[in-house]
Length: 62
Image 1 (cartoon, rainbow, N blue to C red):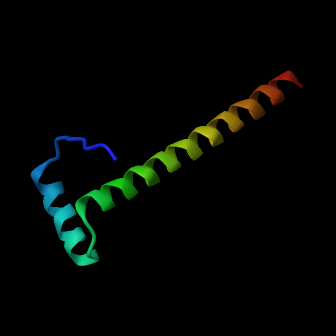
Image 2 (cartoon, helix red, strand yellow):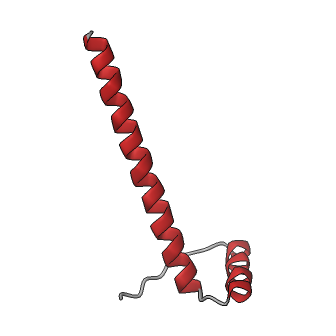
Image 3 (cartoon, rainbow, N blue to C red):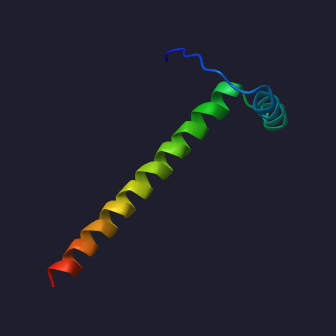
């Protein structure tokens, strides 16, 4: 695994730390899961949008 760095607002970092403490997880575990979930949602929404556009094109062809 590679190490990365990024900037985060203080309030969000405090929220992250509190969540990590309560869930007995590390910051890294939570951030990795959040990124995976975000990318999965974005991929799904892209597929839905492409599917919608394809149906729209087919309707216009009729």
